[in-house]
Length: 197
Image (tube, rainbow, N blue to C red; front, top):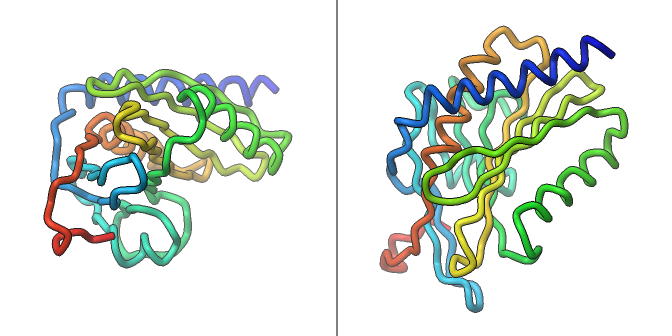
């Protein structure tokens, strides 16, 4: 049990250190994913500055696995470990905390023995909160939920899985936090022919 507590505390410390290191890098990058107008929700675009060494994909592997975008290093393996996944969905729950609670319930239904910790990500443009799940399968997951605001009609998340003994966990988490902090929502006004989704 003490080892589990130490691992949980280590995750939070790594994440906060990663945020401190990346806070200055929170500038908008190129648009990574787009979504069409949906009822009252306007068309949207998600822009992010991608860390060096990561490949951006919205339309090949991401579409094949049913997500809005992925970032990965090296060759695409199809395995969830070490892949950053962007999901965007219509706002249905009343608050960002409600989104986190629903995600926690789903995760703990699948793995009742999992341990979790949540913490705020001080994003400059929108509220974001992260949860770290320590699975009984020795795979850790980090999920960052963000709320671009009522007028956007959406919420979004970044997630990534790690083996709990991954020797590259620190640099991977640093890059993950850089992406979460650098992510920007934009109301999309590009012409329909330029849309990728």
